[in-house]
Image (cartoon, rainbow, N blue to C red; front, side):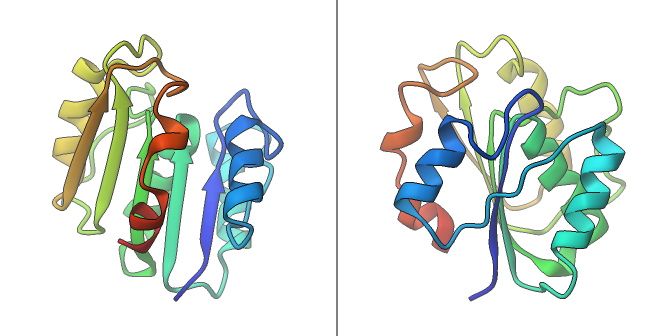
Length: 157
């Protein structure tokens, strides 16, 4: 199998709650640290993923936006995406001309006020052709559901 990366959110880091959880439960997942704006972060991701052709990208919030942008640029290099409350409502994002064929799981909280489902889900449906949506009674951070997700299945999809 290929490489798996966890992409943290805008105000988080590789040492955030989700990054630490992945380090403990899935040590094979690479957890880089990103800084700067979207372009800077995507450039760093391009460098990290150079030579990787079977990628699984797990992106949280702004990291979900990064994963989506990477998949738009490199659909043949992405095996699967797992988007946790992805920031598709970011002003710089618009759905691609052709929907991304990468199998994608989107997990979102029904009480998310940062990436509200009523704004994010229509954009996701316009962006992905193989999209599975999982909605939970949860907030943006997915405090109640994150650790209870079936991560083995999500990462092997």
